[in-house]
Length: 606
Image (cartoon, rainbow, N blue to C red; front, side):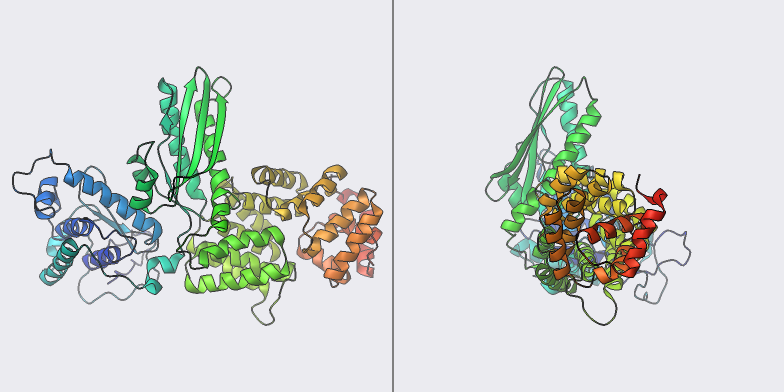
């Protein structure tokens, strides 16, 4: 049963009722992501039922030892069984909500310092909940058992059922297997790379290294979860580990594929950080890097923030270490949907019509299977947009590609408002739906959310540049290419165009050659205008011919094409004039645009 939302906007949402809590308990203990071994199910069921029965204050280590672990009445606190099992249960709950329970309606936690469970809404309560059963509603506490529990009618039958389930789990060590088609994980998306961060070790002496080790671990726990394509275990898990934790424990206890570990060594004013990424299946070091800093030139907090940012970007960004490893060796439980997100980045690096069709089909299947997979919706938005702006595999009928792109982006934002990829998709869809001001506002929001995401940096830099902010756009594109020198041919092309507009022919030629997107029609158009300005007439004419062969409809409609991309009038005129010099025929409309550049020199980029 779900309790309806209160009608007043300012009223707090109702708290979960006992039926909701029990339904969530069943959801957890029957999930494949909740460990069947041990006494976690019996432990969790016991503390929940005690709280629901109004006996929260009885939930002590002694009572749990007697009732759950069957210790005799001589049990003392010297026996650590309850503390150890409570720690395991907290980590199991954290893992469950990280992987399978992200979209569950209720979150159950057992805060440290005690064993009393808390019940709270995991996210916003649905706007159209099921009708409440007849009878007065109640408001359970989300911390301890308030008097409302006692006002409920007896729930003996439910208690017997739960106790029976707990006993069965305890005796057999097994649990029902849920239907994958209906599990929470299937609804919200496949599990991408999972990462555990071990506390960084203090390898030196003195207070600075210890303080830095603690601070850097905290910074990493903040920076890495911003990359929504990966799943990062939180502080609760990290604090239970030692800096030299064995990878086999990380694999068996948390099911995480990767472990980030490292150490800090301080000597005088010098600090060296060593970070490494390990594969938990075999302990192999997949990546390592040293970072050296001087406390005399920078303060401690600036250093740890900078190092955390560099580490996060290196391993977690769209073209980073984990993405490359997963692309080469997908996780065994992938089933195809997560692979779609990896193939999206491969498509973006190539920008061909053939890859576009493959990725679009794959992503459509992914969102059909995982309707709450925000990242897939965001990527699908960008792929739909490419039907219109690049003329890749356009589908006839309605809704049109631009409308489908905007709908998919808004769906991604609805599912995950803080997702960098969703914000990027919304920015780009708004830009091509002729709402450039709103698009750039969303871009600024995305950049503030995750300033290290190279895919976002490149896309936002491109949108700013084309809007006329060529200098700032070029700076963001440079940042993206420094962080990701091995990928993003599209962004090399955008940076080449920015250099052309800023009259930097040397950079323009270098960047367009690095882009090398032979299957992408607009690459050849940009190359043609760059070679014209650089005095490379033969190369310019060859590129112009290729462009016209690949996209013959562009030049006859060149003003409309450039306007749809939000190029400023003077920039349009400059591009059209350069293409004409490269040998492409200019229509009467294009000739008028060229004359605009001659008649209105004040419109030229400064």
